[in-house]
Image (tube, rainbow, N blue to C red; front, side, top):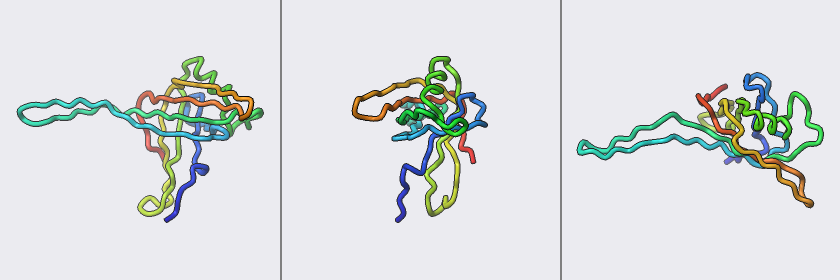
Length: 145
């Protein structure tokens, strides 16, 4: 059985929100894609009924700061801080883990527009400076090729 290493995945961000100029979070240490949907359950004498709302997604990430990010390919802490400070709606996508079997070779992305809702700069005298944050979806979630 083949295993997929996280190092083959990236989180791509377009701080303009246009979803056309993708840059990757550099030196990504961890990321998680989280999907949620609100639901309401009604108990009646006819049975139980469940209603669900629109799904939302968030991405939590942790990346190392780069002193000289490559323009046009790498997103910097400064760009993320600016998007956070200005409440800028950004585009984000995460490639699926390409697996064997029914989706062999399939490449698609979790993709959405959203806002940086949390951003932390972590500094230690014995480690690399890193930043972590959360991007919360706003609107439709796409499964894009």
